Length: 127
Image (tube, rainbow, N blue to C red; front, side, top):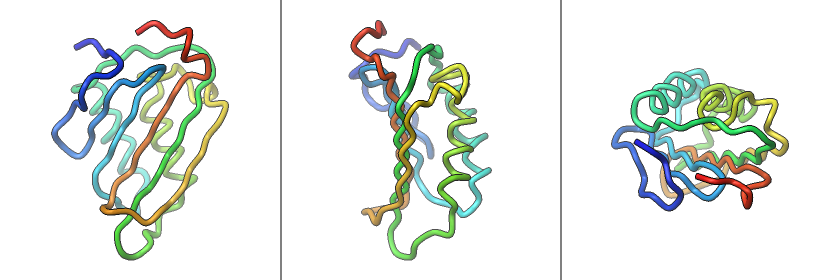
């Protein structure tokens, strides 16, 4: 499967992703208090259902934890580390390429995690 910007969401389980200009958007349904749960889940999704080739250059990454009801007892720094480790080798070669990282927890319509990773020089990117 080749990934092209504008394609529909791929994946039918807990993890879905789609290519966007200069990067990738990922949605993970459900929230658990164990950040380590997300690393193998997202890594296996990329390996089996959404193969991509990593890119060089600086990336901007936004992670948004949306929750319904009680605020989850999940440390955002641990969540960010788990997700960056899971996407390493798929979106970028190393998480040291992340030049800007924004993590936030907000009340939403359902429990989910959204991640958007975009190259800073996305205008020069060829899919």
